[in-house]
Image: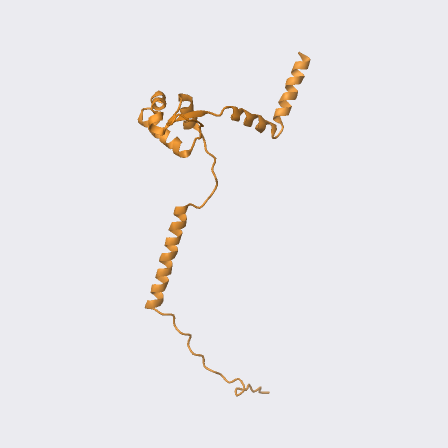
Length: 150
């Protein structure tokens, strides 16, 4: 029992090192890739997207939480033959936040706002044109003398 416990302890220490656990987990996840059959009979890798998850959740809720119904109707609803296990995987998939990004809608809205502001500035300039600077009085510095009284 001594050599076996040493071997297990050494294996645990090896897996606990940074990077090794991720490698083992990655290999395990790679082995668990699911395949689906599409409408045309082609076997493809199951790619879980936010849209697929949203659609599956909607059908799942409308069916009253009946996984078998969703699985049986998946070919007609999603164009993929999905098993009950794959439905669960889709429902419980968590997506990483991709971080802040600018959407096309945000860019359009910003351009629209800038265009409105420019229109308002142009309208203001037409209604109340910028005033000319008041003419300055010229002072002749050579004619004014300061007398110092003693």
